[in-house]
View 1 (cartoon, rainbow, N blue to C red):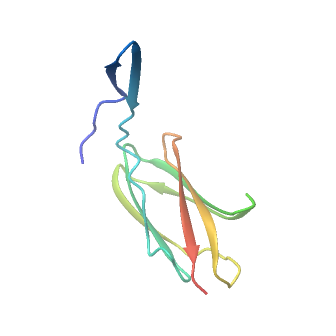
View 2 (view 1 turned 90 degrees about the horizontal axis):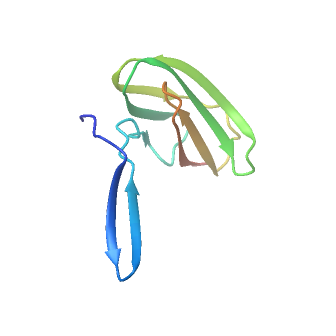
Length: 113
């Protein structure tokens, strides 16, 4: 992928109302999580626009942090495997992923049995 300029603003005129549609194109927001649902291990794949520290946190649906892992990534494509210690039962969790530039992305993940 290549870096896209952003944010992009588009004005749409409707009668007397002006609607501004703002689309923020962010090169870094390309987090892929697989398999989902997962059993014991989950892989995260992402594109970073600079090298640095990334933080993966897993929360339950009540907002309690259950797992955290930090590592250094390189600029460009990265892939890591997480082996979170979570209760051994089916459940839905939220993966919070923090990029080196401080941007945060959330993805719902599900654990099978």
